Image (cartoon, rainbow, N blue to C red; front, top):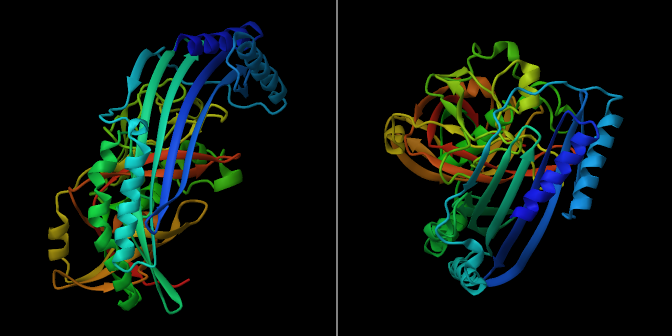
Length: 478
């Protein structure tokens, strides 16, 4: 809308007039909706709408940021003034003085959407969740839950370098879970994952999940887990399903390659990274099957966009190629500090939050195998799928994960179900042990990635497929 661009223009122009050497303004208008159901009845419905402008100003070598929900010209100019004022106050602690050069982008972008999620009647959405949860209860689940979430975001970005960008990003997704209660234990089975599946698509994504059709199986498997034996302890061959491997990528690769962590800027809240920039282009991160790509252009994935929140056009870049660490997630400022020539990975949670380096879509390229081939080639091991718990140290190096379900693998076939499966490892050693990788890639969406201080929630995507890892310790307790 022209009024939103006018507000951004006013903020930037006033910041420049007051002495900023660079300024940008980002107006965001977001509508949200979520619904949850429990045991055949709608439990909660939340709808929200918010709009405002966030202004950044660079004075000397220091940044200032100020945000306001008021978009009239006077309020926008005041936001520009306050951003400059904060930048001058920040000069007591000088920061980096440069950003890598950027071509001024002028353009529009919208995510693909065939069915507007917010236009689907609430009654239809409620019927979907209540039917799925009622079926799980009918099949014996003690607790049956379902949910969906929708985000409809418009962004207008203006910079003193000539950027003028508007974007429309629609995201949605959902899922179901069944809990079975036994004697001193509970077991959970979910579909399509514990948090659901999400992407930058319309309601067609949720329709394709066909939640109700999977409800009976989910409930049956939750009860079967109560009767299943414990996952054995020891070192063995581990096969991970694609959803669990997506979280493995998120935690032990995605966060580790965020450049602000590597530079130590994120240490106050969520730790740093085990990676050293001096090893970029040389360090062996994993086996030759490991090809990790950062790609904000991936169609329909949750971390996709047209331009990041510094106006950098979305692109595709290697992070790991044939097992060698080759790239990072960066912004214009962190890239300048590190001597790199690329950015494109800066986003913020909303108009009131300061943009920072965030994951976009960080995921594996396809391997040469199928899951059936991986299982057939495994004489003795464990298959685990769907995340249930995770723990990783503040350098993103040592980790322990738990999954909802496991299965013995014996003589090339899946055997009996195993409950409480867990595994542990050290990032590079674990990834170097990967010796088979499927071509069956799914771009899993993570809508709850936390980072920053004050904290921000980000949306990220992780293309992943089932893979096999040798000599992994499984069945760890505690």
